[in-house]
Figure (tube, rainbow, N blue to C red):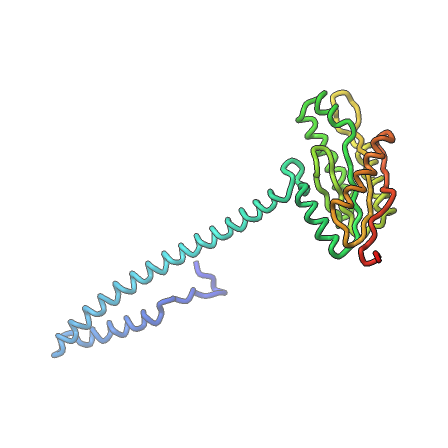
Length: 253
């Protein structure tokens, strides 16, 4: 049904239809006259024109279907490209950025701004896998990621850089602010219920490093990783800040 508000859709071949109507009227006027030969020729021309018009309509409909299918295919290709890009940049288990993606983003940010890196490692994770199996280990990893996502600022980025090791990238955060975020993350994991078969809890150790613009992932990560191992050696389930920070290159003489 055609909507009264929009009216009938315009006919793509309206001009051709009008010409055909005029030709039929002329053919009717010729009937029975002395111009029978002309009328007969006009009648054949009308029939040929009608066939041509029907064929043209059929081709247009086929073209419309092909265009629709092409648009649907392009949409599907765009969806597949986005899916492939997501898979290339994200960890398949947790959905956070993978190691290559977090490195790329950190180095890109360092071109123009300071960053703080928080590196964390789940304490005694091997015991969890060995005692309760890898499915339980995966459940713990997912639970830790949920804790991180619930606490980190909206501008933060989370990456899984190893089996049970993660990096949180904090933009526009000082070393002191980043330490507070790391402490909040540590407490969130410590108080989370992971439902391990033996009723034990899960903790993580943290290393924090602040680095100025112009630095790079390897340098900043190296300092944060050193701080992480200080936390590990100090008894785990704690936050340690790197003893030195990497200055911005614009401040280096």
